[in-house]
Image (cartoon, rainbow, N blue to C red; front, side):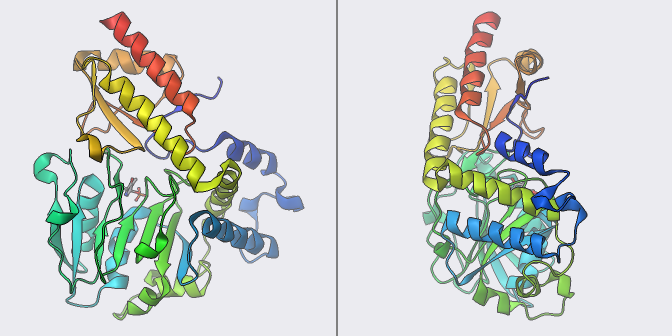
Length: 361
Ligand SMILES: *Cc1c(COP(=O)(O)O)cnc(C)c1O
């Protein structure tokens, strides 16, 4: 079996060059005669690799010095709960913008630890549009404002960073981090599960303004406290060494591709090609999202007749197009177009879609 074009929403495609390098280095990493997975995270070799990964990430996103970069575990979901514990004190409230499934989850997991103020929601619109910034009911005394710039299931994306004044802006960027240049200084805290656009699952990347680390005042275990992780260079306990290594390879690959500006252009071209194919299909295929809110990363679409879904999935798989089945909450199809998905994959998908429509009229 050859490599397929992989449109998985997550865990998602990794750059083939990254996988090939990991394969080459699997038995003998860095001349050590052992795999990176088989050695101490306290070894000189590992520490050097880990520091290089952080440096490359800092270079890619031009992360300012007053921000810490953390390599954590627990998935984005654990941090839905851990963020309020670290950023809010007893009795504080935090503003949540809910524009899809993950934002709703984030607010739910935070609720035991902070008074959640639902400052804006597009649930009544079935998350097909974004609550405009002008409609957000923000509380200037909130501990932070949390939002999800790209909603992976609903396929909506904020293309501009909202202005929220002095209150720290917290963003779950699990499915759009590293897809375009980012002004980190606009945020208090950015976090992302790695398995969409960085590496394997089990690793969480966090970029956090250092002064916010001092907020965590209430009693908590050390392992919960981001300041402890920062002080220990994310090696408070054994990190996900394999994930960290693969993330580092991905960062090197991104730099070799031309960095964030090059990725932004590529991601824009991929998304435009697919949306054009959907919109130009005379409603054979449909994407229901309000056009200005459409995600570049995750493109849900339906066929005009759901009875054709099973054939579409079967034939697309035979054509080497993997994981197009939509999330169970929405049905239909979804194509995820993360960094590791090349333009050729989208060209193959749109050609297949046109051919399928012709054959199944
Ligand atoms: C996938 C995803 C999550 C969940 O990540 P886990 O690592 O499974 O906890 C959270 N937020 C967004 C935006 C996601 O895409």
